[in-house]
Image (tube, rainbow, N blue to C red; front, side):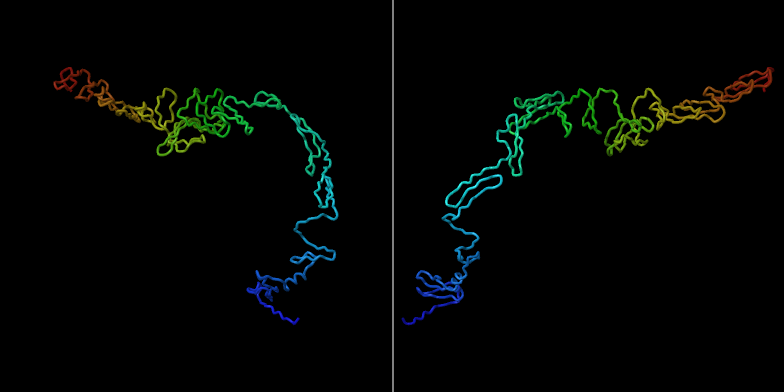
Length: 430
């Protein structure tokens, strides 16, 4: 056979050649693969790429390498995924140890069953618990019951109320919770619950309570709080004497009552006994609420009282009692002063002269005054001194004069003009 030279196409591309004739080979310098057109497609058929993989085959566990059996026809692998059909040359025993025992031989030729025997835990076999007994258990570290026993159940329930007591056999009887006056009990079988309700006739000790109807207390009502608020329009009591300041042992609190009103702001008025002097005081116009039971009282907040006084003592009045109120209008008077009416509902004082005799004179107009002598029109003589044997004679409309004689044998005569004169018995005049 003559020598034949076969020429191969080659290229520097990695993938298959784009065009080859049927059975025409080509080689890639880059991918080191020999390609050929098999009539259907261009496929790789050899080349250094594949011979290098074959040359690198090994029996050790090496990633991405062909498996090569060693001299004993063995190879190493991590995980083999395959369908096996066969059995173990040497059968192996599978055994359990610890609290469970059991052994079975396995060669993969057929299914086997491992029978397990549990070691004794120490608990006595039997039936535990019942209607009158409950089991008590001891559990070891492995969670097994190491001992078990029966304990009698207490089937008697003792109960005690505010008054009275009793016992109940739980096996034969049920406990009934029954409501009373103002209390209703409701049992719910679905959730094993009994609720107790009180109606609006029962006072609660906490959380506040509102009573819509009347409240009647037949016994004593004791309130231990610090404040009692009565938001009512009428307060009625059968007690005719109301006790205040029950804890005023040291007599330091003002005692009385007061109210609130509005007049140019919030004001307070009332009647109190002042603890500082023991005097009852009527006040009005106070701007500070005396909630501390101590009243700031002064002349500026004295109240006006409209009343009839039928007894008692009146002293230390702030102002004089007016004439229209039965007084004089004066707060002071001197010894000898005379109080006279000076007008309608007014009085005046006539001061007693400092020395000498004086007479109270009332004029025809009703005016009073002090005078040294009593005038003729007031029934007097107009004189303060008289001479022995002198005679008082009228000397005009009101004046009065005194006439007299110092010589015996004179007689008093009245002349034609009405003038008085003394004449001597012998006809002479003086």
